Image (cartoon, rainbow, N blue to C red):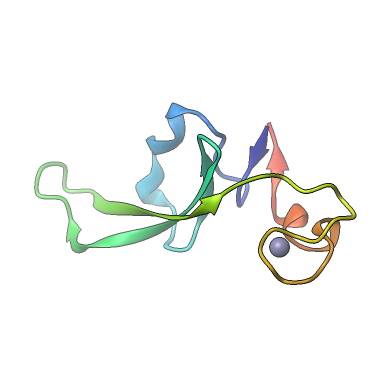
Length: 88
Ligand SMILES: [Zn+2]
């Protein structure tokens, strides 16, 4: 299983502790790639924690190592986004 930015796996645990991560952290959840952003009211009144919005970036299909990266950088996957991830 892939972890985005060495943070998260694709399961329901994805929300746990998410507020500790900076905006722009990418995560994979249920085969959709999301970017983490802060919501307008920075702190949730209920919990006092930073409230977050997950901005969907698109459906994630992992390319083969020598295929073009899904992020449209025109680089091979192995020389691009593959490097910033780790696996469970
Ligand atoms: Zn890439």
